[in-house]
Image 1 (cartoon, helix red, strand yellow):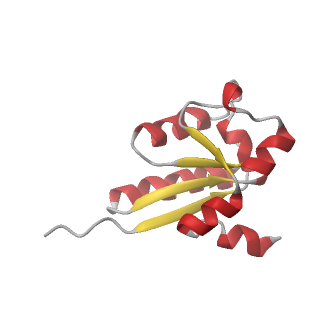
Image 2 (spheres, one colour):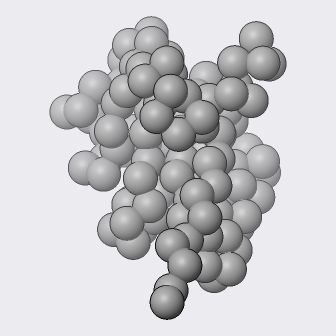
Amino acid sequence: MNKPASPVGFCIGTGPASEKTAIALRLIEASIAAGLAPSVFLYDDGIYNGLNGLSVKNSLADFERLGNRGVPVYACLNMAKHRGVVPENSHAGLSIQSLLARSEERRVGKECRSRW
């Protein structure tokens, strides 16, 4: 019997031009290759990774590709509101949700909350 993939959450708080974002994308790809079930939560300046028309180092294409592979990509509702990110100007696979809703559902935001 196949065991379900273990969930792993990534909280990205850096923008598209950051090397930390590129490293996070590589870690997400590695988690997929290892048979894990990643999900991504964009927070703080990480929100900009979901904007259409703001493609640095192809990071928008990378996040869209993750969504196409079934990796859920979420953005913090409050951060998105303050940075002008709405469904109309973000990539199709981005789901804008509150940090509280995400942290209660999968505990993705626990590390993000502890930073602030």
